[in-house]
Image 1 (cartoon, rainbow, N blue to C red):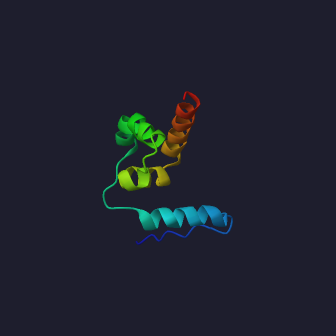
Image 2: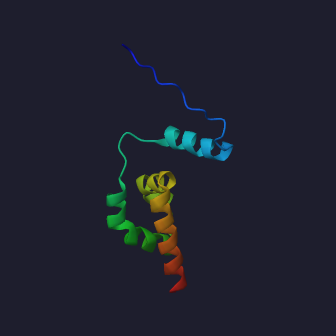
Length: 87
């Protein structure tokens, strides 16, 4: 017996959320870094950003992860904000 999965009702999904999902799917790479790997270097990434370095150009795999992962992006933005306050 073959069971088919019924598609979920997507009518209540906000267009902006759907756009984020589709952009995330379209930009997913075969090999990406994970949250633990990013966490290990997060302090250095924030230091580079604070020094004016272009993270997207310098570390595209990290920028991609930050684009895809709201938890890591929130942590990055919080650390960057704290680093900016301590200057």
